[in-house]
Image (cartoon, rainbow, N blue to C red; front, side, top):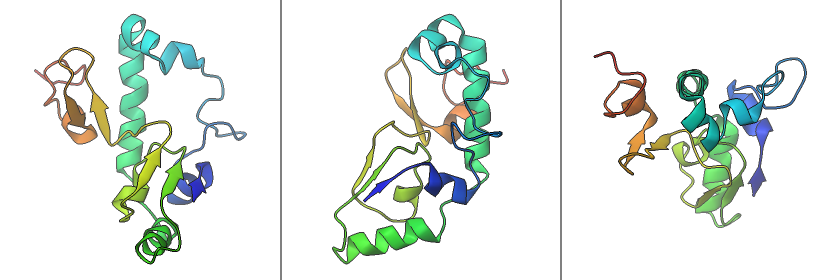
Amino acid sequence: MLTGAGMSTESGLPDYRSAPKGMWRGIDLLQLASVEALLQNTENFYKFYKKRIVDLNEVTHHVGHEILAKWEKKSIIRSAITQNVDGFHANAGSRTVYELHGTLQKCHCHNCLREYSNTELLEGIHPYSMWRSD
């Protein structure tokens, strides 16, 4: 089963392109959402993703995600393939999820090469975190 922005918007997350509230409206993706932005525009990169992660952690999966998880368990579908980065398919119980654009549930550090949950990153557990309070 292939899913996209409609699954996330039903949970309360904005999509990327719709007017007038699309997340990418008025934003240069290369300046905020790329490896180059991480390396060259670090403060704004972190500010942008912090807001995305905070917003993501304020909502959760919905009944549609749960139905797809049940269908997978009943072998009606084999997997969920999604463009969404919210991690809601797995949160709802889907076991085989292909996240085409990755997930914001976890973050990979380019310095130490470890993976951290988005909560660990927000709480400043990550030693290189821009969000650390100390």
